[in-house]
Length: 220
Length: 337
Image 1: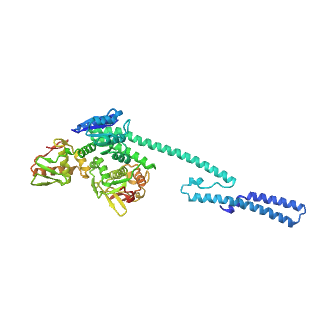
Image 2: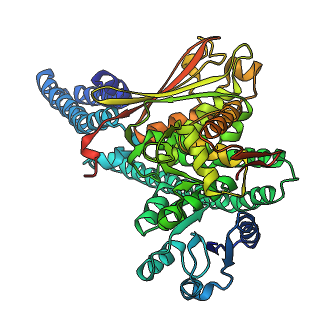
Image 3: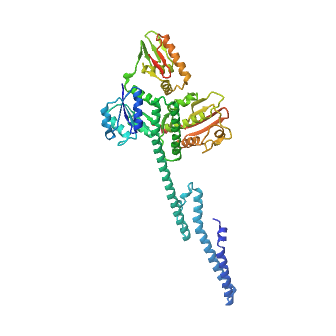
């Protein structure tokens, strides 16, 4: 379980954010004493840091610069300032991503998992049952035959695989697809999923994807 | 400066001179001075008078001609006192000093308003950041409690849109450069917009065709994202009920420009309204008969584009389509290698 460290001075946002991350299966820790932020952060040994720019005592950008001298822990900047200058500055100080408030929670979770995936490569699964996944080629293979998936099917399959055994909501699937520049609608998602299902079934993986009514899909 | 008018202005002193001469003439005749001598005195008297008027005229002429031509040539007329030299005659100097004085007072006045306006802008920006916190907090609460329906998040997003409008309006009205121009991928900017507004686009079943966007332009990505959001937001207000809503977004590249087209298949803009749509508070026929409009959206877009140095155009056929295009210059000097 990945641990996420939250640095946010607005108490209401902080508690809601912690709850959101807990529901998404992360362990969280919040900074409450801003007088010695740097030490607290370093001592927490988190896998990812969510850092607000407008925090008491020391500005988030300065804090980021100081953290970067000591550790490579991925940092996502979260701010209500919509300005290119702040973003460029944060990125140049070594932030891994930059998100502006108010953020869509699904997008935030997506960004967090993307940054974690990029930073800790071991999280990436490359096989499912007896199938090897070739992301670059967009195909699955069982050693003899190859199953070609379309781009959309591959994105869906990859997301379900990353959360194997957990429910993935349609909202998450949609956001991920759109994030990958596939601007499809609701019907198209349903069609894509049933096509992916039948392709997997043809390849010997019967009932791989289950539908959970009103919740989403789950890869068994 | 016209000599005849100047002379007309001097008519009183000329008449006084003539009256004085008549008295002198009368006086001299009474002393039986010969008419030849009187004539000589007369010539000297009038020569002095003419010389005096001419001298006065030319001294003024140099100053006023200078003043007039400066006023005509100056782009910013209030710089007049700085551009004109102090004249060498007394009343001119008085006039010149007063000019400088009023000018200075005007400058002080303007400086004060400018300060007010900057302070106001700073306050609005601060307020925007402040008000975004409770909105962010509420959005998270909605997500954490799925039983509170999607309706709440939708309204929160509407609030957020309104807040953004205020911020960009303030930014567009202020000359300060709070943008940063760098290489920006059109694909990434559009993607950022689309992902954030996916729910709204999907609720309306909009077909989005994004083509040929894998291209970079020199702009501020945050401002461009806002501009795209405004244009597509407009499209969504004015879709035609007769056909499936569709938005085509694509870029066209020429030798020295890149143009981003955002084309919808909505109700279009009447030809008579088309020239005015970028004007402040202009709502036009669509704004009256269809969705309510503030007439600010396109005005802000135009101002932002002007600041960034982009060209924005609208092309439309009523009941068929509206195409808003933004043209970016290709300037290789600006590329950071």
